Every structure is written in structure tokens, then in C-alpha cells.
Image 1: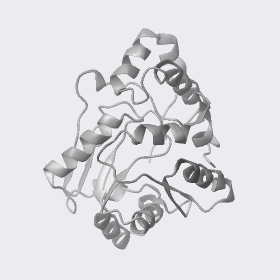
Image 2: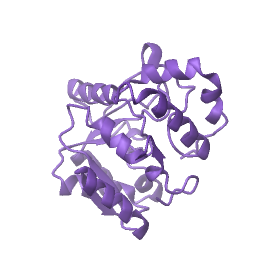
Image 3: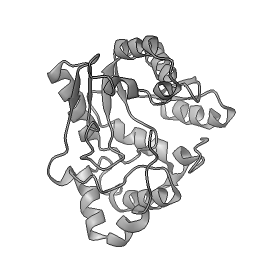
Image 4: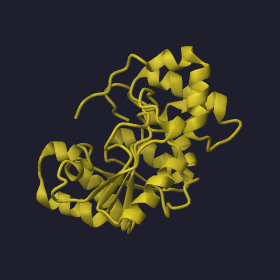
Length: 233
């Protein structure tokens, strides 16, 4: 809730529902997920996030705002997760089929870490990372660097000499790294609302391909957040 660029963004509404609720709705279409857990902070401002998790009947964990690595690790431990599928809460347009694909690839490869963002081939907002809880615990023992602890999996993919990595590239219509489908700025919120308004009434688990086609057919909407620049780690 204390996002610097768009405060309260996870509870901003589209189609009469908070963005985080819409994200949870989409993740419920991922058959490989045993449980959805919202890892939020102990800040009083995030009481509303806990209340939403309770209303939706999904898990939650509250921890440090700054030490996100330990927050996620503790959430996984409390909910007895052997494997973590890490998604950030500002990606309400996440495609359930892409999440499934990354999980399946993780199982197939048998490596320490698989994601679809080691190379930027998908639009931002589709990032999915999969790794074992034991791997994250190993990271927590190895590093106390605040950057590593703010960006949960950063240490893993920056140290391929320690951990085996796999990447899932975008294919076909999904290969649109030029598009921005995450939620960081007011312009992102405007675009996300337009996408949900156009596509959700027809299909709640609408795929990335439908989003791409909609934006290509509506260039004025696609241009809403075209000037937004991501922050660097």
C-alpha cells in the first residue's frame, strides 16, 4: 500500500474489484498451484491487504517491508510450501497459462530456478519465477546485502556459478517485450482498467494474446503508458 509511485495500487479498482483480487482470480486458474499466499507487510496500512486475503479465502503472511526475501521465505515456511512460485502483487494481468508453463518447465528441467524473465521477451507484468524454498533459505544464509533482500530472487540469478538456471522465452504473439502490463504509475492503472473492462466480461482468464490483440487494435490505449520507464535494480 505504500508504493512510492502509485500508493494503494493493489487495492485500486477495475471492474468494481481491487487489482489484487483480480490477480488472485486469475491465479486460481493455474492448476499447478496448491495455495495462493499474499506476503504483505506489518505496516498498519496493509491491514486492508490482510482483510482482502481473508475475504478471498487465500493465505497471507505479514513481515518486513524492506526485507522481502525473509518475508517470502517465512511465508513459504508458515504455509509449508516446498516450491515457491513468486509473483509480484502489481501484475494483475498475469496470464495463468504462462504461470503454468513456467511451473511445468521447472519440473521438466530439474534446475534450481526457472523464470520467464532472465531474457526480456514477454511484456512486463508477466514475470513468473519458480524455485524451491530450500534454495531461498540458502540465499538468506549467504547474503545480508539489502539489495538481495529487497529483490527476493536477485541473488539466485546473479550467481549462476552457485545455482542452475532455466528460462522460458515468449513465443508467437506473446513475444511483445515492448508492451507494459504492470502497475507502477497512474498511466499503468488507466491502461489496466481499459484491458479489464474490454476483456474480463468475456473471459476471466483471458490470455496474453487477447491483451496484445486488444492493444494493437486500440493504439490510443496502448499509448497510455508507453512513456513510463521502469526503475532499475
